[in-house]
Image 1 (cartoon, one colour):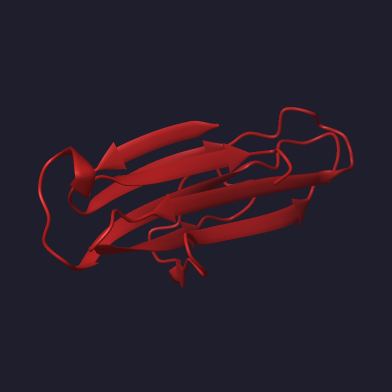
Image 2 (image 1 turned 60 degrees about the horizontal axis):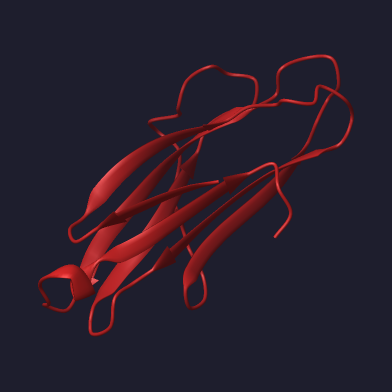
Length: 114
């Protein structure tokens, strides 16, 4: 689990590693909480499974709900590395605020429930 904060639009590159290497499901979840009076969107670009690089041409998927979140699950093929890359975009949409109260929070979890 990793956490990042910020006050402006930002990009992140995240690799979810297949640590178990047995047939089970791999999981990834990202949650973005916008500060009061501001709106930031979470857009996730998922790479190809078993490819050791992000997919720069992937279609972005917007987070849903409040706070905005994105979750995906994929099958572990067992015996081979089937982790994947995600590119995360935190995009400013609306609102003006400053200082510590204007920070968004991005929480990223890989291979954990919830």
